[in-house]
Image (tube, rainbow, N blue to C red; front, side, top):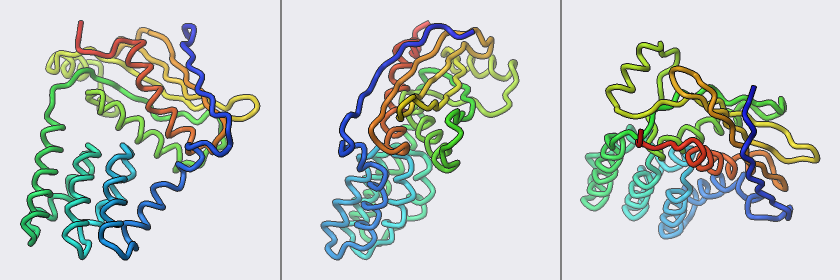
Length: 249
């Protein structure tokens, strides 16, 4: 039996709200990066992609490391560093021997920054179940992208994510080594009456699995992809506050 939910209501009343434009943003910026005639416009597109905090932006940015302009290649490297996504390391490391000195420095700084980010001390340990689509209507690729975005936000909060099918003994060993607390979360997407979506995160202790409760965030007035992009960061922040996801024991 679930505990009473903490509910945050995010109302997006206008169909033309900013979120309604979010679904095509990466595609638009990707086209600007690939097809823009002016290197300055391509560089600007790269910099904006780096500010999105979207793990999907890595795949859009990486081809830009082969751009004909040194200005664009340097901007891409800086943006990949800003995204803080470890998935950017392979494409950056493939360009560590860049011919242009300024670009080479930007690439190497990005690699160093990402490795330093990966090595920072853990704040919590999280076992995460796959995203459950209880609307039963979302495209599988959207559910997968939303789950990836959730994992990325957890890592940004200092979480180490537990491997799949980890045993209880393995979990206890990892927790002892890291010196942090463990949590198990189940993320769910629910439909709302009259339209809109609700993202719920059910949280338990880990590996003992004592129920802590649930947080919910809701939104309407935009397409599902746009709603989920807005709801995932808010759900993580609410869960962190509600369940005291910190290294304090």
